[in-house]
Amino acid sequence: MKNKLDEEYFEILVQPQAFGEVFADFISSNIEETLEEITTPYDFVGYENDLSPYDLSVFFKEEEQKHTQIIIRTTKSPQLILSMLQDFSHTLSNRLGERVEFGYGYKVCQNKDWIEAYKQSILPVSVGGFYIRPSWHKSAKEEGVELQDIIIDPALAFGSGHHATTSMCLELLSEMDLREKRVLDVGCGSGILSICSSFLGANVEICDTDEFAIEESKKNFALNSQSFSTSWVGSISQAQGEYDVIVANILAHIIMMLDFDTPLRNGGKLILSGILQDYQEQVLECFKGYQIDKILQKDEWVALKLAKVK
Image (cartoon, rainbow, N blue to C red; front, side, top):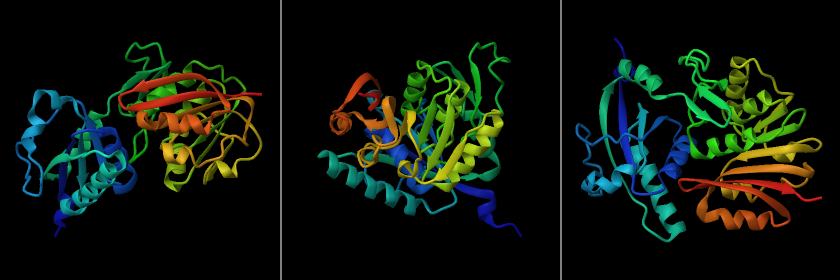
């Protein structure tokens, strides 16, 4: 007899009142379940919401419909995941000095339905000079798009070009001449930034503290017939030699802990993303000896392009 969990799963709909991208990052980094961010709002009809301590009606107001909604698909207990989210919202509220709450509900779904639905929800995105798509969608050429075709199959927490922090990095990289440049991707995730750098002519190295990220990057490099020179499980402290460009799409508090200066050559470029706007000045203070080439902002996120002054 088949286990019921093989046939059914829980779909948890979460709608933060603010900082939706931060919630999505927390879920993908800590809960490790399949998630989907949506811009076309769902309502909570059909979702059990008896666990919610909040008034869900606030999420039906017109001005609230622009907020991020997140769908989590899991075979784990909704109570367990929602408890983790409640703890996170309390921590975030304490750090920001303001209440950050969320509405949620859940329902039981048939396992056979969501895989195809999830695949169809991951649409191609055009950013910088790139057309980024999962392998099951048509190529840029087939769609008549004159951009560099990049295949990224999303997995768990790893970027596929849709997140503001990733797209800003891609915009900054697209503007640079990376031919024969030595580039290090710190916290490579899916490998999207290093793959795009490789297409731009860079000699790429990748690292991530998550071994699974390195494996996913290798798969995506192979899908795109690109290569990197070196990879390792770990961080920038293990880098050898000097780099022309270092890119890091990681959270601000981690950026401020790492030594980017030693492995970056004089005159080299540093691209930093994953920084909430509220932390921009703190991050810049850590790099006050650097020249600010460019600052991009999308939603509540910023990306920095800095130059190491000779």
